[in-house]
Image (cartoon, rainbow, N blue to C red; front, side):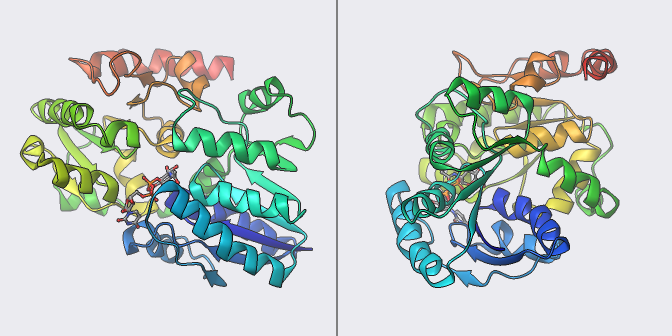
Length: 344
Ligand code: UD1
């Protein structure tokens, strides 16, 4: 069997690391294609190095652009590769513009499409990621769901054929890489265990509206009087902060470059808690028994919120961070922990 895997953005590269190893183990031929949606060293190359992955066979070099530009350029270039390689299956991951582009190419060429991390859903429906998730699931033939809730979400939309509850590849990666987590950032920034927060913010609904972004930054700055606040900053967020002239709002915050997987996980492991709008990090923090203030109106990992482990900060006041998040997030975490484990 010959598989083409299409990756392009940071979270997909990480998921591919796990799948790649299994494909090799089972003697499946894999052609690896990188769309080039993420191209900075910190957003892409570094993951190949630290996760010891094989290099892509093709790089489509689509780069940045509007959603239509990224999706369109990926489709045009990827179609050429698929027609040349004639795979049995196309594998796509997650919810990015690269994902939906790969799924549409496969569907139109009548090549079975397999979606890793199918069935995650969250409001609002008009975010680029949610649109990508829904379209990709609709045209996929094999849907690999990471949770039971994801299977139920698909069933609610009438998608039952080809659905497999396979568990979460991010957890597989966590277990595999835990012995190799890199704790050097803690030392480099002279942080104390449980006295610092890890923050990542990059979703368009948090970064692209100046009022919301300013509000989030001011809240982080306020928190920095209680904790050290470490913010590995995504390029989109950095661009918007510069564009809106908000650099002053982060005076008390430790802004650093995006971190590779091993360094980010090392940092999370000893943090007090995490503030993020990243779907991936919400789940990884849970694997490390760290709770998360989720700066989103809704999340694909709804079960972690329903069980009281993670806290959604948004709703009406999108991007709002409570006056004292530590009260919300860390009141008796062991009780929440125990309750959650009992139900699992
Ligand atoms: C994308 C995914 C999102 C995922 C995230 C992980 C979509 C719609 N969204 O969001 O689901 O959680 O990746 O990081 O595909 N940029 C750089 N260097 C890079 C990459 C991006 O400077 O290496 C800049 C570009 O100018 C770009 C902006 O960041 O315009 C946003 O990048 P983009 O790929 O559009 O989406 P992300 O916000 O990264």
